[in-house]
Length: 261
Image (tube, rainbow, N blue to C red; front, side, top):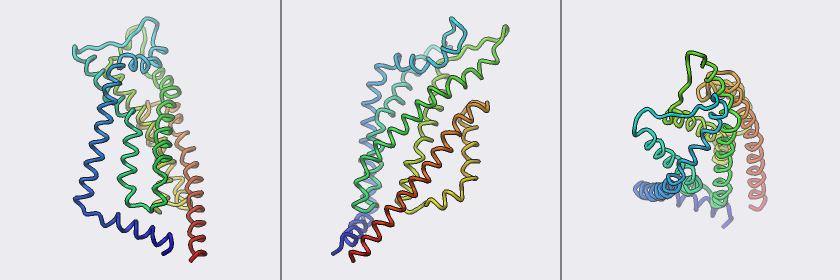
């Protein structure tokens, strides 16, 4: 029996898994993710004050001298630190989450395609962190400067802890997620759902969507929107190149299998 036939049988065996077995497998992997997040929460909550100080730095650098963040409700600081612990736990658990996600979809793939689990986890985590760091170092300063332009001798900005954390978290996760674009495109290409020719034809619609997303996720100034749209356009073009490489590899493998048969 050829390797291709063995892989087909392997795929069919995974596809024949009963529906209840799928639900059991999903529940098991969700429990593992929740445990990983809980462990990350404990670590991040312990260092929540230090984490928040780091998050405040881009804002404090553009605030008038002597300004600080405030909290207007008594429990606001406590719940903000809880949220920092929770979302920090999610970030720390990302390798586990991505690995469990891959493990859940892997039975629907060929055996040789399952070896990409570790690269998938590494690149997913790395690109997410690169996107978050890009937002923190590049977009935050410009965005905060824009909002502070409305302050004058009669109006003073008094940013609150909870509002600042929610706003900065939205931007950090937004940039982290958009930097996952190459990984998503490569995965879809391996599943046969997209190809380089299709992505190239849809380029103008993709760029329009990119600027719409940039307008939604960033402060309402053109500089911040360009800072988000620019990397997204580059990532889209990189995705096309990667998808083309995936196609060529798949075609080469298919030709080799046909020659052996």
